[in-house]
Length: 284
Image 1 (cartoon, rainbow, N blue to C red):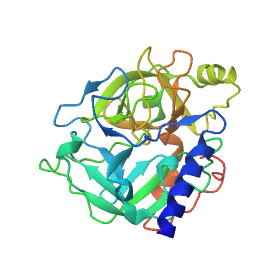
Image 2 (cartoon, rainbow, N blue to C red):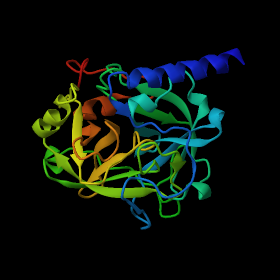
Image 3 (cartoon, helix red, strand yellow):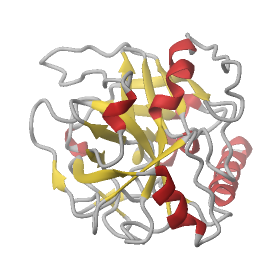
Image 4 (cartoon, one colour):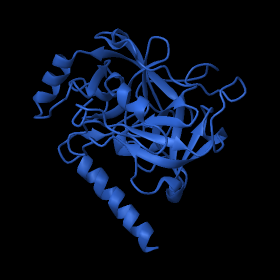
C-alpha cells in the first residue's frame, strides 16, 4: 500500500513539475467515456487509417486512457516522455488495433519503459519514450495493426505540410471525457521561427532541435492526446503530441516532439538497453 501511495505522489509531482513553466503537457486527466474528442475532429473509420495508433492505459488507476502511442515494430511503441512513469512498467497496458476503446481488448503488457535520458520535465526537451512489449504484435488484416513510417526524408515534414493529428483526448480546454472513438483533425506544419515568435510573447522557449509545431484555426490536439501521432503524407510520423498553451488557441500552435531528430536514438534502442548517441545528450 505504501508503494502505491508513493507512486501516486511521484506521478502527481511529475505532472506538476512538467507544467511549472506554463507549458501544458497533454497527458490526460482521469478521462471517462464520453463524447467524441480531438478539437474539431472527425472519427477515424477507415480500416487502414490509424492502424499504428495505440491507447496507453494504467491498470492501477482503473484501466483508463492515459496517452497515445505509435507502433514502431512488433515489440516497440513510441510515446511522449512525460507519459512514461518510471519504475512501474507492469502497470502499463496497451490496446492496439481498435479505434473504439470499448471494443478493444488487451494487446500487450509493458516490460520496460525507456525514456530519453535528455528528457526534461521543465523544458519538455527530448519528450519521447519507448515502451517494450511483453507480447509481439501481429501485423495482418485480422489485427488491423501496422508500424508507422519513420521520417527518413525530412522534407515530408516541411513548413506548410498538411498533416493529421490523432487521439482519444478531450476536445476543449478543461474537458474530462475520453473519446469513445479514435479521432483525427487536420493541421499544417508551422515554421520554427513563427512558432518560436508565438511563444516568445509568453516568455516560453520552443527548441527547434527537439520540437516541431503545427496549427490550424480552431483545430488542435488536447489533454489525453499526449504521445499520439502527427502524421504527414503517407503514414509518416513527423511528431508526437507534446505540449501547448491551452488547446486550439489561435496565438499558440501545438508543439510536438520532432521524430526526425530522434531516429538514431530510436534505432539504437535494442531490448532493455538504450544509449544516447554522441552529441545527443541535450537534443538529438
